[in-house]
Image 1 (cartoon, rainbow, N blue to C red):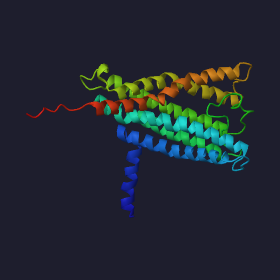
Image 2 (tube, helix red, strand yellow):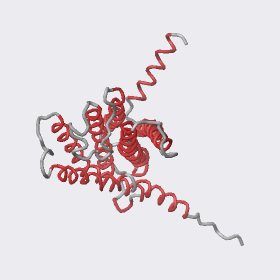
Image 3 (tube, rainbow, N blue to C red):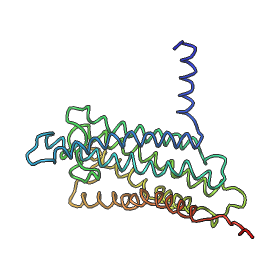
Length: 279
């Protein structure tokens, strides 16, 4: 390839990576989710190989814990939730008649925050003491400095914070698009069922996901010894209460958009055009 041809190719890739078109943003988010799905799936296959027969020695106990943690957190934070929101990024503007997403640069930032957060989480594999191994819920004291020594857990926390902020950015834009950019005559009661499912899911993200960001930040402060938030008789319970303020809505965020998509397909396929009977 000549240098002149290489420059337009690089410019084309840069334009895609920096695009604010909702279809391209959804494609980038879906591609990122698929890549992390493959990575997380390989972790799962390795675990199943270890469990295939008693006494197998495919991986060590510590490595198994790391695979378990990275598989679960990858599927939750990097695959299912981003893919559910990416469906909304692609379809909602089309269904409500919006020319573009509300705050498209916020969505662009959110998409790359999710991707960057996933890469930061994987950096733990390159550290001396390995990746995070406290489970995807990172219960304290397993996730504390004594339960999970090393910077692998710190990378995991920073990655979760970045990916969660990205999800919040996507959800905030979807809420803004549905409330502010609907076409004339498109009232809330006329919204398609899929858009309603995305709207409810995005509201749950905006209201509950910031708690996870705060929880992860407090956990990191605790690990660094700056502020012993959870290091006390009720610290573990306090962590669980904070985490599940995020965790319970997250289950529905990963569920509702797909139910809405199926309901939309069923509703559309059930509509039959009126055909005049021949005489």
